[in-house]
Image (cartoon, rainbow, N blue to C red; front, side):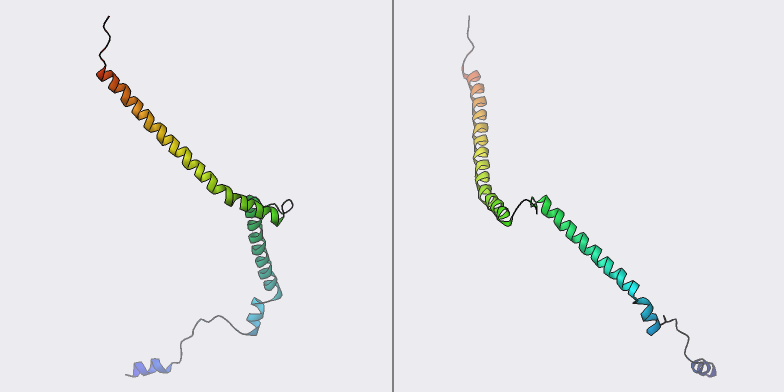
Length: 122
């Protein structure tokens, strides 16, 4: 029992704790660290702006050449012409289907003709 009480009375064990206090906080938040953080934020913002500008250019919006009116007109033209183009594709596809069915019937007819018409005798 004395061994247990001797271990309990020896005091707290040393704990590895990072130093804290005003001198450590000042070292981690100095003007150089703040400048680095601001420059990183600026570079991230610049990267985002450059990506969005590249996206707008790839979509066809040139800042120098087109006004918002031109861009709106281009969008309206796309909205109006898309259904017309889809209808045209539908008519074309229907025509191909009818042509294919006609070719099938033509082929079947030529086979039937050979089956029912006896060959000529000379």
